[in-house]
Image 1 (cartoon, rainbow, N blue to C red):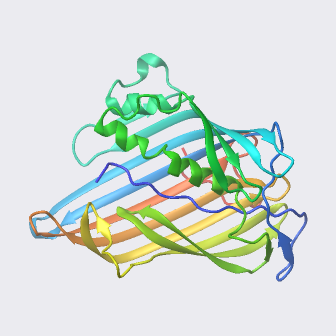
Image 2: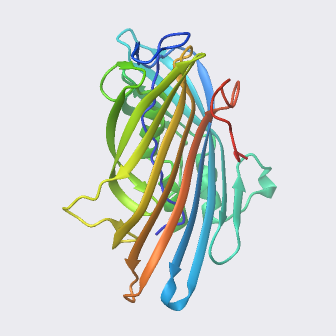
Image 3: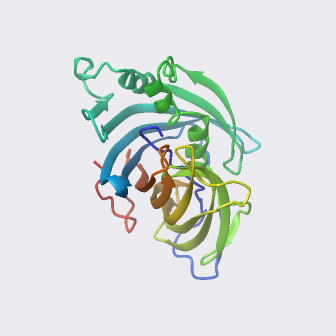
Length: 319
C-alpha cells in the first residue's frame, strides 16, 4: 500500500435564497458561475494508520498530512449556463511520519534552498503553480479538462512520485470541482429536512475502490448558510471481496461522516468536512492474521475572505 490513502470528496449544494428556511420549505439548489470571480480554498487531508500483527506483537503507525491551496477563477460564463473555470494550485505542503525512517516535510511556500531534493519533493514541487482549465455544466458537473499548464510536469518519474500523482490526477480534479459547484444529486429542489442518497467509488481507510453510499440530509438554511450532513456506508458487494493492500479483508468497523456549509449569497462552498474511521482484519503474505485501523479526515474551506462562516463549523487543528 502507498504511504497515503485517497479520500474522495462529494457533492456540494447551492441554495439560492436568503433569510431562514423553515422545515418543509422548498429551496432551489443550483450552482452560480460569475465571470471574473476568484476564490481561494485550502484542501487539507490527514491520515493516521495503525497496523498490528497480534501474534508477534508488531505494531506500526503512519501519520501524514497533505495541504493544497487552490485558486479558482471563472474565465467564461456561457449563455447556456456552462462555464470555463481555471483551477490553480498556489501552494502544496506535506508532512509524513513513517513507521520507520526519517520524517518527511515539504512546503512549496518555503525558500528554494530550504526545500528537500528527494523524488517525492520534486513531485510535489511539480504541481505547485500549475493549473487546469475545465468546462463545467450548468448543474455543476465537470464535463472535461480543456487545458493543462505545467501541471505535474515530470511528476511520475519514480514510485514516490507516482504515489503523489494519485492526489492530483483527473479523478481528484473532478471530485474537487464537483464538490465546489455541483448541486444535490439530480434535482434542484429540496426542502429543509429532505433526505437523499448518493453512491460513488471511493478509497477509504485502505479499503480500495469500493462503493460508498452516502445518506444526506439538508439540515438547515439560516443566516446565509446552508448546512448539509451525511453518513456513509461501505457497500460490501457479493461479487468481490473488499481489498486491503491487495488481499481480501473482513471489514470490522466503518464510520464515515460528512458535513458541509454552503454560502447562499455567493452560491459556493464555504466549508466541507469528512471524518472517517475504518477497521479491517486480513492475512499477511505469511498467512498471519493482521489488523489495520485507519482514521482519516478531509477539510476544504475558503481562505481568501474568511475561514469559517458566522454560525458555521469551527475550524480545529487546521494548521
